[in-house]
Amino acid sequence: MTKPYKRPESVLVVVYTPELQSLIIERTDYKDAWQNVTGSLEEDETPRQTAIRELQEELGIDASQHELQDWGITNEWEIFEIWRHRYAPGVTMNTEHVFGLLVSERFEPQLAPREHTGWLWRDWNVAAEAVFSPSNADALRMLPEMAEKFGASMLPQGHA
Image 1 (cartoon, rainbow, N blue to C red):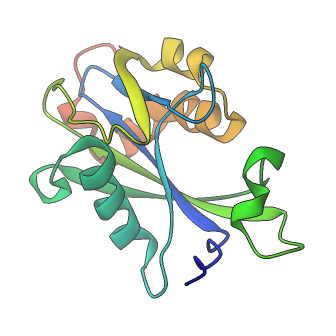
Image 2 (cartoon, rainbow, N blue to C red; image 1 turned 135 degrees about the vertical axis):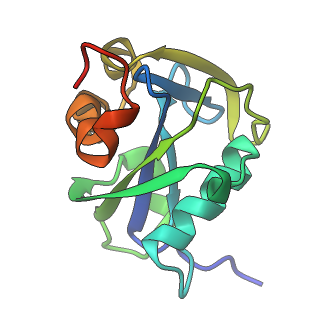
């Protein structure tokens, strides 16, 4: 049976603490490629359902135990050449929905070993410089603003 093509629609989830520490993970299939949690929507999934599934698959966490925030941001980007074979012929663009997941404190993720080899907690601005994808970097740079929008009362003094 032939594996179906990936749907050119995905999620990006910035996992962060009230202190604006963000979790980034390293891909197995692309050397030195650090990123946020990402993943393609499956058949009838909504972006929120995909975010919940990907958080479980990639980090081993239950999003319902934390604050999953739909940031209301959609990016359009060109699919990296290295991964285009996963999509139908002629598909070169992807639509990405951005979410945040506020966790109360840093934790040790249970990575999916076929997808990720390492993880780091970093200040949002340091994480933004470490990720390979421009949309991941943009999302991390927006973290202070989005964290304030979704819960300034939870932020430590000096961030609000």
